Amino acid sequence: MLQVAFIRENKLEVTKRLSKRLDNAQETVEKVLALDASRRKTQTQLDATAAELNTLSKEIGMLFKSGQPEKANLLKQKTADLKEQKATLTEGLTTTSEELQQMLYQIPNLPHDSVPVGDSEEDNEEVFCHGAVPKLHNGAQPHWELAKKYDIIDFELGNKITGAGFPVYKGKGARLQRALINYFLDKNTAAGYSEVQVPHVVNEASGLGTGQLPDKEGQMYYIDADDLYLIPTGEVPATNIFRDTLLQENELPKQLTTYTPCFRREAGSYGAHVRGLNRLHQFDKVEILRVEHPDHSYKALDIMVDHVKSILEELQLPYRILRLCSGDLGFTSALTYDFEVFSTAQDRWLEISSVSNFETFQANRLKLRFKNAEGKSQLAHTLNGSSLALPRVLAGILENYQTESGIEIPEVLRPYTGFDRID
Image (cartoon, rainbow, N blue to C red; front, side, top):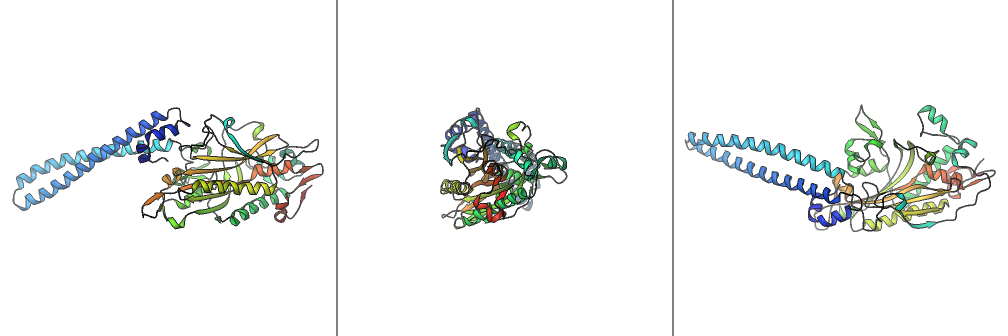
């Protein structure tokens, strides 16, 4: 969430940067500032009324003590009017403050200067590409056919148990899935990230804190009886560890990694492009996140990008990195790099990671601050990245490592799987 003070003090900059994302940026900024001005004016009036009430109360007490009840009673009538005025001002302040808060919740983050202007994923900018696309044998198949052929993922059984988008991993498919999770976590902890296990359901405050609410409310599974949400990503509970926290500057950076299942309704997602593992309602993901000093957060973002690169290069999967354009940028992000693995059998790129810097956007919602060298409280920067999302990585391995006689296992995973082929 943007800070009102920052919008007020940097109106032109905010309008310019927000224009990359909103057609009505100027109108939005003007409305925020009008509500803020009204709120501050009402607060000033309320403070003045409260101060006058306090002064009159003391004066009335003195008049009664000095034997002047008639004068005291006249002033008491005035205090009654002031109390009514105070109640009206308080109600108006509450209404205006709530309207301002709700509007701020609806405004996306300001895009970084390097974010290209664009309307959709077609306008994303490729900034890096690595690895040769393997040449597959004639008759090579997409992963959903391989999963059926080798009996390692059962989509129909998942549909029977729950519904579409909830696959059952079996035998070597389940072991490969577990191997990837352990490999990702080991890579992350070796890079200095502390592993945490977090709840898989969160309350509304947590969803608001990281920006999933209200922006993605319709995409989250909601447990009505308990007023809780199934997590769409481990980012939500892990980042909320730091909600309402004041850190010391020397405690930064904070670096965490977590494995969780993720749950997404993905309403309106249909078609061949979401077949098999390409888009699921439940899937596994390993996350990395950082809480950083604002001066260091973009260097930290580069470090996170390099870390994900190293994983994909060890897996020997062809991949590319995209800088997301303003139209494809997530609601909370200032700058996002997407990693995509090339699926040779599908002849298309599959997104497998997003690495983002949210700057102070989440920290402002979370009330996540640190005490700087001058002893002043300052908002931290938060960053997050998939390291990695399993379904499409698994799809990429099955498709790119397939041979006529079976599926090879990437060498780096063999100590984790205990086998080197699926046949």
